[in-house]
Image (cartoon, rainbow, N blue to C red):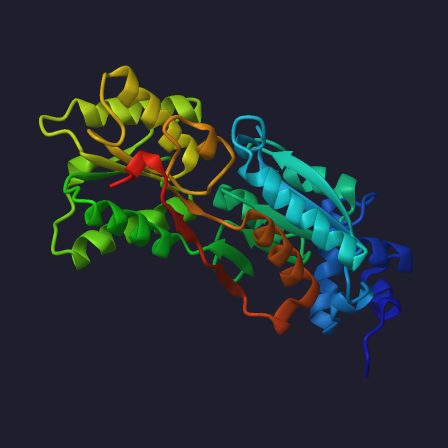
Length: 325
């Protein structure tokens, strides 16, 4: 026999409206009541997805506060453009919420009363697990968590293409400059870097893999990491940076040190944001279709299990003057 919300209300000793708000994750209930209703719904075998329409009407685009400075790094602003385009097509109302690890993210989300959450970029696992605990449809963009639908650029292949390009132009001491390796995408790019070296018959030199120090501005952290590389007895003749902002910071450090780019040090970034083509010299990078990441994230939420749960979008090597042969 089909279980109804009236059955749940009677079993929980609450009103039908309370059951509806609990299953929709709406405001006005205590966590204790919400958990009670959801537990009883599960025990009775109720499919909470039936309470919502098959298509969400309100979507929250969740972004870590460290990614929210669109003026300095516009990557996620382009992802958001793609989200907005897709939401218009599906008749969904999107809102942007930026949060940090110390913020009450569940309370913040309840203020928006979303039907679905699209989380983009790096998040602490604890934050993602809190959001997943709300039992809302959730998908990830430029991020990965076991069991969650996600869409990412082909980070491994991008690392391979960048490193292989630097090998092809004759560079042999190729460094990888990373931000926090807690970020799934940056770890995957490092895997591609090492794979390309291995396929070329070269051993990866641990001295040539540097990580920007935590707790500082990302551009300043990348600059500090680049200075560390330049202090090596045998400095690198090429740098593959984890993203364009890190690559541009490394380029500036090299120029301040009197080194010529690309003659003394060739540099490759990742993302192809507008500052990459505005720099002098223009930056070689891996082009990511950022709007497509956002659109695909929305499609994962709208179509659920009709799509592959782990989507990988291709990237393209764009060779410019910072690594011209």
